[in-house]
Length: 400
Ligand code: AMP
Image 1 (cartoon, rainbow, N blue to C red):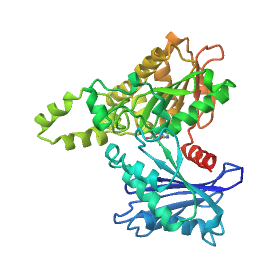
Image 2: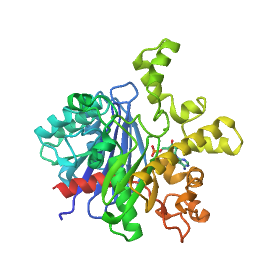
Image 3: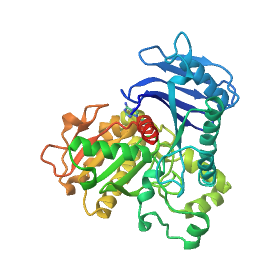
């Protein structure tokens, strides 16, 4: 395969994360973030490999302007990493929702853009921003091939019994109301790495991936296919997250609307942005570094929050072990899963029924791929740093 540099773009409503990755060495040549796009005080951080991080406060009225600044930085004579845009062989876009239209990544054509637009209803905050990113790149680099890599695609193999809600079936037929799942690129990357680390065939394994970051989800991967995942129609379902509630009785919404004299939208905003770990800790923090310190200091709000967070993960592990009739390997990834050994200890302390004991010395390490279960455990526990950008770059190159 021809060596090339792939620009990986992750557009949010007012932000844009990027990495330029060399396809052959898989090294990150430069990376950065544009924030507050379209809002006063927009700024860009840009870090070339081996160079210093630069921060530029400059107006960015829209995503096209942000991408123009990114391309200017990448080709800058002083601190740029490529001589011209010709040295960027492809662009890979992270797209949040592919609905049932996309079960895999795809090269972007006009039809693909239309099909992504059809999913806007399902992710009204994210997909339009992703599309703006696609259009901005198309305007500035019209001849560069682009790929769409979907957060939902990996989960499209879920069977009907896992993705259907217990709702009138015509809501699925009429509006495609079903469970989709997110973080698919990460679940796919980590589950494949787990098979590699164990030297086993991906198709022969029952894998549970716990992606525990600010957004958090668990997935079950059996014989090379995702068979269940904890997020649903939207990322609100499932685990207790940084600021999202996760699973709850839907009747709570109407109850709180009445008590607090709020609209459904206002309550949903609270469920997405003020709940989860932040809400449970009484507004203390959504960051596990703060929570762990407070837990160790005996702070009751931190203790109840971390216990509730861990307990929900434990329940999903149990459910997925049952769904797959066993589990060969449990993986921890993302900000909390990779870095917080304490939460891994809390979670795995429930897993004696799987014969799991933890090698505390291995569990104390950070930031590397490592087996943390004791050597004689039948079910393995691995920590695997996720790398969604690299996975998107690989997918992009594979499509060319
Ligand atoms: P992510 O969304 O994957 O970037 O994860 C973000 C979360 O990971 C943060 O809110 C922290 O709770 C957690 N995290 C990141 N770094 C650490 C660390 N060194 N120790 C403990 N928790 C961490």
